[in-house]
Length: 574
Picture 1: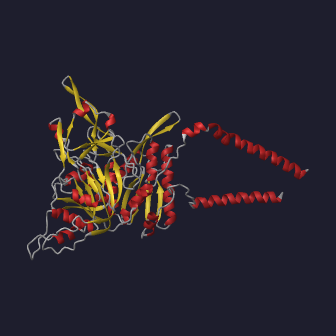
Picture 2: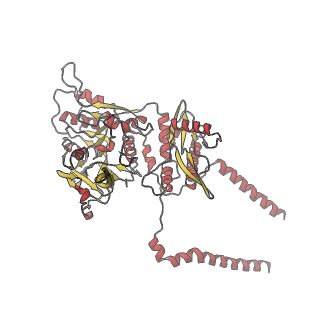
Picture 3: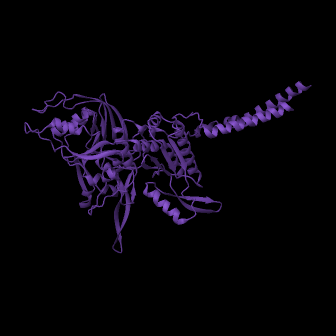
């Protein structure tokens, strides 16, 4: 009897001890294929370089629906793992912004959180037969030394059919969102990047949103970089020879980690091309956003059709040497945005209907690369296809058209008549046309074995070391609209449905970060929660066997064990 009591006490003591251990430690074995619940090496490296304490206030506490409870728990588990890596330098707390009963105090807190950069979300909370709406802030404020930063980790995707899909995407990005914020807080200086000028590129106001953000949020290049504009045509003069100093211009360009060539419209001369080429050979990164043809909706405002022609920029040989060719064509895609067309009048009031406009593809990335993985709703306008050239450069397709697309070679007529007389759907038989491509490797100069500029002290490089660049065949992908009154609209804003497509900004920010960031935290975005779906065909075919294994077989084992145990006990005490 004493032994039994001792065993029971020992068992209860062991259970209590294990509960205490698990409360203060986060012991997990990650058996997922993509290491979803493991802290990456990049994150550990960043945390191990911290030199001061980081405190995180997470405003995701309260009475939530199941999906938000899941997001809350995932955030808590992640921060707990961070604290285990740096227990003295990482600390956090969860706060319920709705717990204050005083409405004015609560409203003041809401205003403060919004001013600090947190984005509010309205959710419905159901209790028995009633439901109420509540404003929550699914994000955090991070404090480091005398600086603070907002982290919004709820993602809203326009093609998500359920809130669960948005929560899933948010959980996948938790590590990236927090670690990019920590990097921003702890970085002493920012890299320099520049938009090139001099060849009819987009004006400063036309790239204002990607640079500074019309909405005033952190989705902007200036949050991560020092952004400048650099004019290729403004060449320095050698005071001794009174000639242009190309070598000095190259040195000026080298201070930029990356340059952006956004929708040029004026051909590049050989000096322009030489400067860009030697910038690349010296390790500079380039994001090219080049139109293959000249096409604009402004032309349709004046008439119902126009003829496209090749965008002659004198860059074909240079891009070909690096590994791609932007074709003089237009990609038409059945997955596209819509435009309104006046179909009649009622009491002298024009009546409009929306029609799919195949020249404005809506891209949903299928790429597994960290730059474009999981991006949703990338709005394109008059985009061309890209061919991949067979050379030693590694090529990764980041964006492509849908499986229902086709090509319209230039010169070609673009007409609103396509809406009245839609083409045969079977003609959309050129699927998955390349729209954005990442090139990585050791590039060869397009000026190799050519005559170089005379009287110049240029340290010409025939080849680059390991380098990378991104080519996008749509200059409008980075352009925000500007009204006649100078009002700047958000990037990828569709005025007809009053909606901003989110993918454009995320893609561009990811692209520049990938090109510039020596610490590649964009790889943290490759984590995903994979849904292992059951094979319905196999379930139907083997249903009796599956039912037998899952229902009958366990019962048979239980019966057999019971019979065996009965006879063993009978034999023992006989």
